[in-house]
Length: 73
Length: 544
Ligand SMILES: Cc1ncc(COP(=O)(O)O)c(C=O)c1O
Image 1 (spheres, chains in turn green, red):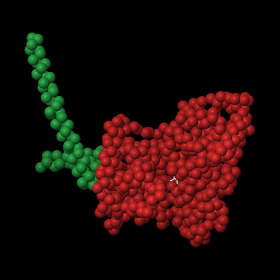
Image 2 (cartoon, rainbow over the protein chains, first blue to last red; image 1 turned 120 degrees about the horizontal axis):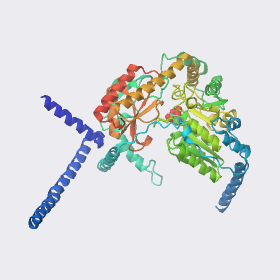
Image 3 (cartoon, each protein chain N blue to C red; image 1 turned 90 degrees about the horizontal axis):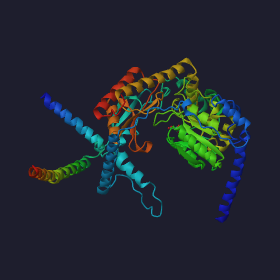
Image 4 (cartoon, rainbow over the protein chains, first blue to last red; image 1 turned 30 degrees about the vertical axis):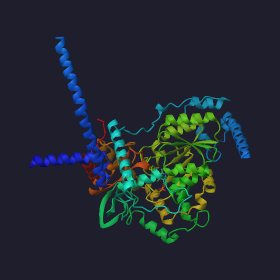
């Protein structure tokens, strides 16, 4: 119970800070939704880019270097 | 057209040659025939070093005036903590989001305002950006501004509560009232007391004797013994020869400046000067060059460059005593020294400092220990410390006679209401009695207490330690609105200030202290601010 309340407080505190810093505190609810969605989409794209491009590149790089090292040894 | 150009050319060359003469014989210089007749004070000044005066007297022909040594003077730095890069970036990002949402909103919905019709061929009434800003940024936080009150704005004020059903396009009254501690009025000395105040009986008597309003200008039928007494009292209060009073402070500046300056004059104006000074300088058609806020080095640079140009009939420094948005105090001693050394003139607007600064409440001259006669034009308003309305211009008798004749206020503006004049006279008299001096001391104590506590709290405050205006930086509009809401909920009425009055990303809350606040009231305010700062994350200060 106590812990649940604490977590809720923590979340609502940081949600307020997020609203304040992005100036969403003073806009109308539907405008808030637009910007939330926009942020979500941006974050999603960023995540997908990291997932699909960056991670595959890195794993490729790693496998090639591992292979090279094996060859050298 | 050609003739006009030719005329212009002739004019400037005449002006130039006369200026050269003036530069060569500085002692005979009548740079400021209208205003400056304090030449004795100028030569024997204690502020400029002896060597300088001697060389000025002895030498003929071109001279090099030595640079000012600013380390000798208190340049009233005040504290202006810079915000971190992160804060600046986030504030700007927030503004972009607001602008973006504004555009979306504008496209989707018709704004709930009157529109201009049948105006083909006319210039639009409003600037498009201003219109956009006021509809889609200002409107969203409008509930924090222009709040109706229903009591005298003394140490406490009663707010009339209102709410909006359509996102602040329109408001309606809820019918309830809320008593708040008033940190929003420029009532520095607590003379705005309403009924039962110290000046009440005298003001009522004056109204009965002279009537409510004069219904005419001073130059025509609006002059009474009370007005003359007020001018006399003001001059005595300030320690100068003469004064002229006007019924409105803003108009004092805008109407007197065109009388004093003309197209051949150069005004060196502080970057944070009040709108009335800026408007006055524009109406005067004087050339204006702006120096960085309170930066005497920049001012000296501009002044020397202007002197070297040699084409100005007069060069006037235009500053304020206390800047109401920054809470800073002008470095008057340094300005007077500079003015004397370079032979400039000084126009000082004491709107916020008169009454509120200095051990005797005589304003920034008193505070900086400067002889008021060294300032060419002393301007100030009665709107703040004296709990009244109106403004004054004070200085030499020649100056006021000139302003009476050439400034437009004396001839065309409505004379001050007798009740207002009487209030000012009473307040000025009270300041010389022990009770009045106690008010000045109380204001100073409250200011120091409040500023120290805020600093300990870790919020960013601007300005000088002694200034009774205390701006607390919150940077974004949302934080400003949220802070004002939280403070109102805790029973504190404070003013939020945003864009047109401050830079776009430096919204702030402005606390104005008052002599009649008790310690308990200030502590209640500080507790409210502390709660809001913790909840909203206002502890921006990175000072230890
Ligand atoms: C520096 C300065 N000058 C002039 C004025 C105008 O005074 P009033 O409000 O009496 O018109 C103000 C008022 O805010 C001010 O701050």
